[in-house]
Length: 126
Image (cartoon, rainbow, N blue to C red; front, top):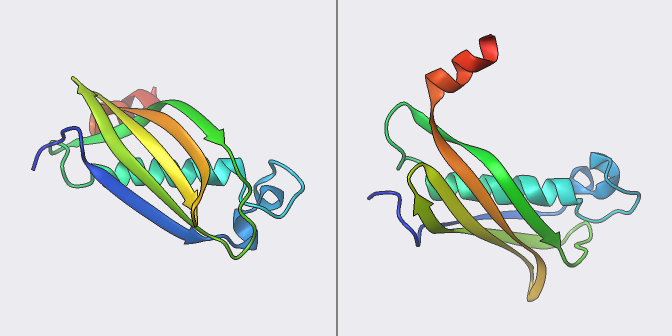
C-alpha cells in the first residue's frame, strides 16, 4: 500500500481528569482540553500513514486549523478520525473529525511534511 488520499485512522479515548482543560492548563473547566484534542488529532494523522512512509522517513506537523465545537466531560468517549485528503509531493493534508457520541466535538485540517528522519534530527544538533 502507498500513501494516497483516502487513508484513514481513528483514535478513541475516554476523557479522564488528565485530559481536561484544567490538567493541560488551557482553562478551568473539567472537560476535554483543546490541546489534548489537538494531540489526539495529530496522533490519528500519524496512525493513518504508519508503516507506509519510505524507509528512513517520518512526518512532522507543519500546519493546524482546529475548531473545538463542543465540550466533552470526564467519562465521555471521544472518537477522533483523520483522513488523508491530499498528497502533494512530501506534503500530506488531513481532515480530522472528533465525535462525542453523535455530537461533533471538533473538526480541523492538519498538514504534515514527510522528512528524512536523520537529516531532520541533525539540524537540531546544530
